Amino acid sequence: TKLAVIIVAAGSGERLGFGMAKAKVPVGSDPMLLHTLRTALSAKIAAQICVALPAGDTDLRALCESVDTDGDLKITTVDGGTTRAESVRAALAALDADVTAVLIQDAARPLTPVEVYHRVAQTLAAGALAVIPALPVTDTVKLVEGSTSAGIAPEKVLLTPDRAVLRSVQTPQGFDLPTLRRAYDAAAGFNAEQRAAVTDDAMLVEAAGVDVYVVMGSASSLKITGPWDLLLAEALLAGPLA
Ligand code: CTP
Ligand code: MG
Image 1: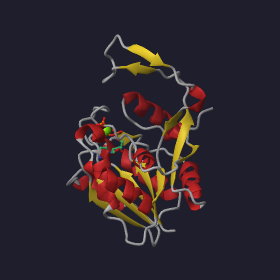
Image 2: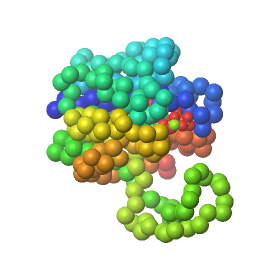
Image 3: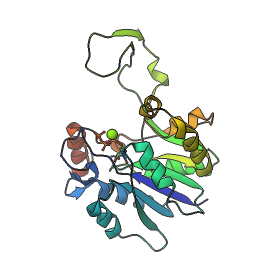
């Protein structure tokens, strides 16, 4: 197998609220994307890294080009799209022809430990067609009726799923490449509502009837969405938890 890592970094970071692409926001002293590139590189599993950037962003392209890699490894960049899925699609189109498997990582998870990359890659190498890292859910989760957005109360509870069988899903998610391409092709005709409902790559593969396997994620692999997450990531960077 020849493995590629796609890093999706084309988001605008509205919820973080820095008024700049989230990939540029400093985590400690370096831009978020630089951390993500370093952690992806240190896993030493990729033959190619393809980064989807905000269209035309020359600063982030220069940052990708400045990263020191060993000999065979190539970092390429593509213009991302207006949704995460469109950014993945653009990167998939730019992979080397001989790539057979891919890990897709959020740039917004700068501190993913190498062990998580390894668990996903090893399970793929063992024959799984789709692998996702996840953590047990610690909050009790309710299914509510008629909810379209958070914060609109009151809502009525329909049911409480058994927490023991719920998982909170992270990235990198790993796929056999032909399987993932088929799943993305099948999603090409989605309407706006269906498109909006796509929140990870695995769900497209699930919709195609492919078995998706779950491996252990990591609390360090948190996604930086809002200001609280950035505080936590900077605390993690500053030193290991006692
Ligand atoms: N992403 C992307 N292209 C998009 C949207 C998102 O590549 N059009 C990437 C982001 O850069 C991020 C990951 O997908 O690494 C997860 O998205 P999210 O956390 O939602 O990041 P943003 O979309 O940047 O944040 P926000 O939704 O708050 O604007
Ligand atoms: Mg987003």
